[in-house]
Image (cartoon, rainbow, N blue to C red):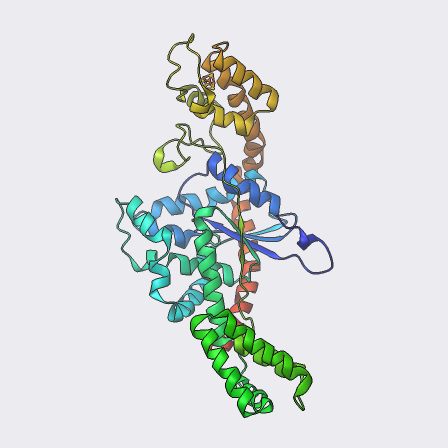
Length: 412
Ligand code: TRP
Ligand code: SF4
């Protein structure tokens, strides 16, 4: 993680991320994402939001799921240690500006960019029980791009599966800046600068620029840049503005209306589900963040272990056991050494082995329950906090949309 945001007088850079409200958050969400969100809040200006429209792209037939989970999810965030004083928390659908930007970006986004998204075909394959041959689902990454660009986020913390969505966001921003990031007299200024170069050099420059634009040839770019460097000392009346203008023209960029975000890859959680597969509600192998302690105990006690270890007297191999993976997350070296030794010599039983994990999870969850309590007993508190966050987000979103409309010639 970079911490440049805390040094110097510049305001902290913005971090943005969202989560789909499709069910109670579980330990996989905590270790895979939320823990990282909490870490980031001190160093950056963090915007975290409930991606309810994104949830609808896959759950458009089950509105009750989303309805139920919107505020519950925010409570899970708060339970995990997200500090509403430091972060801006809001709900996507409360900000129609996201939809406006999505629509405007859609005009110039090639279909192929969306069709080629690895998540697109993948999810259609995986979620066969749902009809995902919809316009909304194809547009999923573009809506995500609008979420990110509308806040001019510098960093987007997501898991690896979401990295292509941040990548397409960068392409969308680049294209937008290329198409619209120019002042009205940009063309006139370019023509004037080219005229200063003289006919031959201007023609040569344009030839290289076109070659670079069409094929991305680095050689053409270098030739054109060399010409600009030469012009700086040699052409009468040449200014540094002329150089910058033509350099922007050459690279196809104008003014940056929508800055390109960077992905902040979250380390993949080592915590699997109870069965050793990825923890996911659809696999029924989760422990909810606010699971009852008795339920935690029951679930861990039932967890499968090394299949070779049938009887208490059989030795086991921790590498073949999901409980061992839980120890990787929850136990110190001493406990891990005890497990390894005890398992491979049949010195301990599997229930003995599971006990420290049960204790550690319960201990981890205790403060979560305490933090969640005031919000559960007085839901107005969460509503209020989201209200404040939504208005804060709206101020930023409105400003961006003002710039976007202006850049696109919609400011009449
Ligand atoms: N697609 C993300 C996910 O499934 C959720 C999301 C929506 C998001 N919009 C976003 C994440 C913007 C980061 C930034 O996890
Ligand atoms: Fe798994 Fe522990 Fe049993 Fe070994 S002793 S098989 S690591 S639960």
